[in-house]
Length: 262
Length: 336
Image (cartoon, rainbow over all chains, first blue to last red; front, top):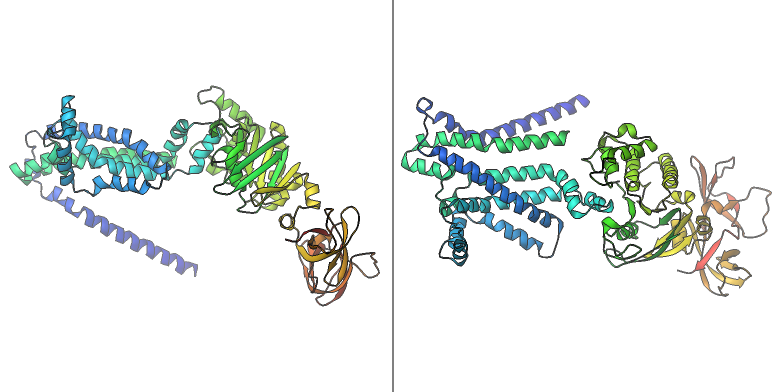
């Protein structure tokens, strides 16, 4: 009896493993082109590829920082304060996610463009939000912030309210409680949020295309290389893109895992 | 003696005046608002509270032990104990270790709470609450998840540790076992305190049938006052019997009342024993032998549950018996 149970269990595990492997294989199958479709003998970068890599890395870093600085308090507030109109706030946060990136880019360009009131006001203070570094960063923030906020909110909601209350009863203020109880306990979820924000910022194409064609980051440069040169100019840059974009989420993911195992 | 007052409308309607001295137990059924009362005192739910009602939670001088103990899972045992101490104090760790040593947990200082047993967690949570030097310690159902033996040990340890730290304890619970060690007790019913004072007084004279039931009384009967004697003693008609019972003074002849008696106060007479009053001849509906107790139930019209510590006496269903309801243990209240 026991033997047949463990056999059944084993066959269940084995079929689940097989199923998962098939799904993963289907998901990553297109990436085989990066090996097969590339002429490894004559590998070379298109002009300004390196410039695009630098632009993407530096500005995505800034965009991520802004997402964390402004998105974290918003996410905490959404997780802790429940009002009757809270669902409306959540729907509003989803709005930039729902909007097709191209349309969001057009909305941003219209709103922050030099002929719109907001754009005119900002340009009077010397901030141009079309085809500039700030415009590039703004586009990435709009693309990445909702992802960051929604995952960070889930992370904060995962912290037992009882522990935060306990901290108050032990004499700690809300601010102290945030730093010594909430943040450490939400760490793993916030790590996921940060990784998600990073890959969204790095990979954003549609919004950036409209608002900041220049300075050119990797996604727009891939498009330009395809148009101007062809596939041979796409894959080398794509390789670099993966090599520079993946280590960061991988590193913080592993770090969070190690801490939670400790 | 520390006087507490609490009025709240949400989530439970409460209007409580309670005096705390030494170990005080507040008894109440589930859902009566015991936890809400503690949370109101702590400032975690909106309520009008005295004292300290005008202070934010973090400045109220109260220690709190919730049901699950709420230890911080990401902090080591000593860090949990040191939590309320000033963050950058160099004495922090030493002070925490000293406290842990006092309860024999110093060897676990570097462990995380997940590695501790239930009893050890409770002690760590108690130390953490005490490290704040509170003026009152609040405990929510400290014995709810414990077996009998551990429960007695834990209560004993709590009492000792509270004496060691010289802090009054307010325990809310539905476990009447804790009252045995308490200096004071109170009963929470319908959002109000229906009785408070010395536990033996409240056990011997519960304020109403519901409180009596909460305190473990099993038998309730309906009757009518026939004659008023002095000092709260009455003759009462219950079915075809005329019984003498004890209650508050002031009932009038003809008044409908509820009577109650604890199962262990229902005396089963052996052959040859005689009794002066409240003697009832009846038959056994059921006889059950349990590990510690013999239990019996008498037949209608007076269905009474009785129990006594196992002795030689054996009974069988249908057997004719004589029982006595001692007048000073047969209590009466206005009909509910």
